[in-house]
Length: 450
Image (cartoon, rainbow, N blue to C red):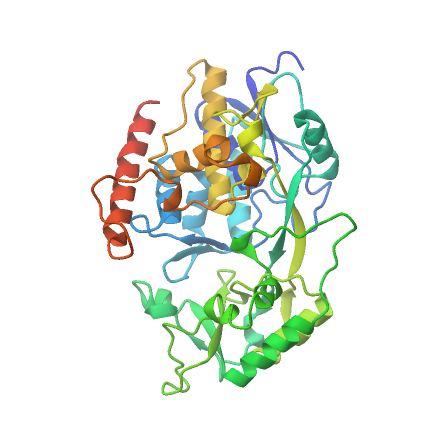
């Protein structure tokens, strides 16, 4: 592998790998992406496209003044991020969220990567941790078993895993619109299309209770011997939420607040199931927050109990898969390099960040850090005042190693802004101060590289 030192090798062509390649290539570095799909398939992926979205089609809030995820969007756009450019181009109405047509999104990323003169793709599986060359491993939560074994062998630590569930997708024309109606919660959005971005199915108390009973009694996916269910709270199967209490779903994804049934405005729904558009044509809708580990037959039966979905046709049923991640605080340095082999960086969800946006953001950082290292102009990551800096600090030392679990970006990871009021009443001013400070700091970080 000698002679490869000026080439950046990226293993994995998901969100993180694609963004890492894009950033490094734009800095003038030659990049090779090693992607095992479609030669080697996974449980969750449907295509061989880069940056395929498997769990949801949402990048969550796009509010860059009051939300940490929206701030991360802003930072990625400021850094000329490919993932954000693709999301913007294939954006769908979703109230205040950033949702995309997932097929068109992945096709766009694949086309842009293939068209870049500094990037090439080699299809095939990488099963070892190289000792030479410059590498970024962005293999995501579905790291192959062979590579997982190699990582475990190299790090001297057992792999950590939790289980992630996928929500079902329904054909729009199979939904009864005499029962369902279109409305974003609190009519959120600047246009009528945004204010009617979600499809809503109302439930009475009796319907909700019957649904919970069926959910709890349904056949579920069983775990293999030796596996334990350590779920990430941001992507819990609905059955697990229901097991925590019969009202849990009604105060979670099925909360009825901020919605008025246009068919019966005077009657307040006891619970509401929301569906979000999944493609640009508006022919597919996914059930928001309805990740599930129910067996396929049980899913169809239980979900058809939802008013308006009695005749639902499913484009994809939900599922559950194993997610792999490193104990990054013990294994990675502050440049995301493997301490035992500094020629190797890890990035994306495998490092213990959770979510498409967070994964892509860590890819952006890994690509830039690796490229500047190759070019002989090393840089440090942005500091913890920024969303990206807060995330990388968390996974490379800020988190408690003994209890390390995947983490979404949130303002709890940011250093406090002095002199601001605490508590709920001061939250709006506090969040605005966080985002103002982050934007100024991130711009300074970008300017320092020019």
